[in-house]
Image 1: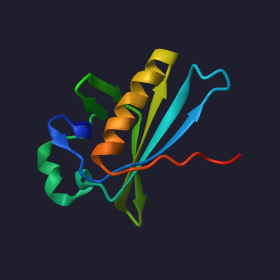
Image 2: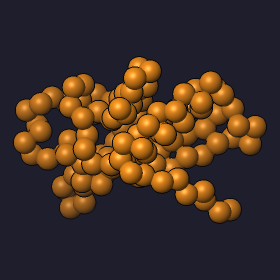
Image 3: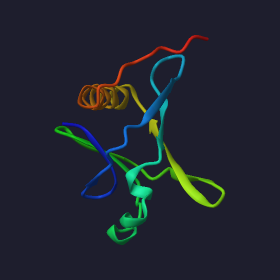
Length: 115
């Protein structure tokens, strides 16, 4: 099972829209996660703690990014964007294994962007 958390121990149930970029040589890249109206921004979550990062967890372990920001519309939090930097071919492989599990658990599909 693969899941995402913003506060340790609390799974985010809103499924992310994920956009990937990869360097020409395939060794590095970025994954941008967009969560629209995630549960973690609901008023009743305030007492649970602060967002300390985005934690990608599965049976292999945990990947973490601290590059997390909230998007506000008229002063109301509407979305969270998080960027995970992929720094090596082995990191890329590990990330893709997580994403395959996350996609399977959340009925997601992969669509290749056209350039």
